[in-house]
Length: 345
Image: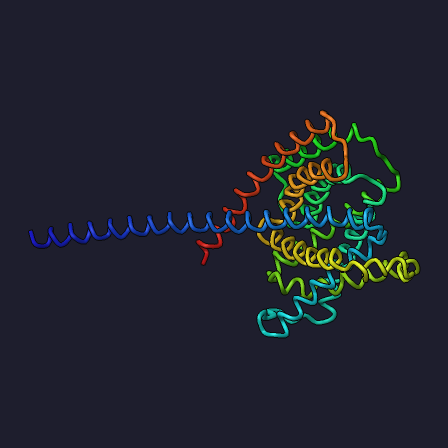
């Protein structure tokens, strides 16, 4: 009888241990899921707010403050971002986990600087030719390019669900573009070049932050000098002669506040962009941009007098359906990957 009692006690204890381990596993899975969603939502909201504000401020500076130098305006963000990152590294607040040789920097970082410079320069140049609302609508085509490039470089897997989400987003934006009153071939050409550069930039960024596991400040420290270098080449070729005239640089000297603010916002955009890509992936970053663009268009209607028709509003609604379809599928994949890493650890 004593032996049977010991056996039953041991069996009950093992059941209790199993239940406790099961509960811990459930709590651990819930914690992983909660932390992922909290981190992703924080970066997405911060990026949406800062990037939306900087688009509106850039448009105001270019058109209403009469400072027609979009490449110079673009260069202020990377310059200020590198200054902040270098200060944090120099003071010991951020430790560089990876020491890059110059050759490694040229292979991995320099292309990011090149494509980022083209993206920033063409992105700001667009506002000289097209309306804010039309630009945001046309940017809806970039997720398709990003998805196929990621698949081509084996940084993502193409599934029917993700393809359906991206397709729905793009169809919605194409519908929205039919009623656009402003049209410029030069503006469209800039858009095509900028979106192609943006797609390549996203691919290199995902490789840098995902496979090589760079931190955010570390990523700024290494990438911003390359961004600034190529933007300076653009300034020297296209803007230097007019920029040095007193009536042009005098606007910055006499009213520096908007230019300081846009530099600080540039730092915020670059930092939160890295955060979104590192947490959610580059295609989620592009898809979230489509939702942000809806807000920018609404603000443009109020501030700049842009006109949006009923057909364009319908296109935006279809775009949101595609975004949530894609985001649901991508979130499931990300959570499964995080859980797999936790189990392996």
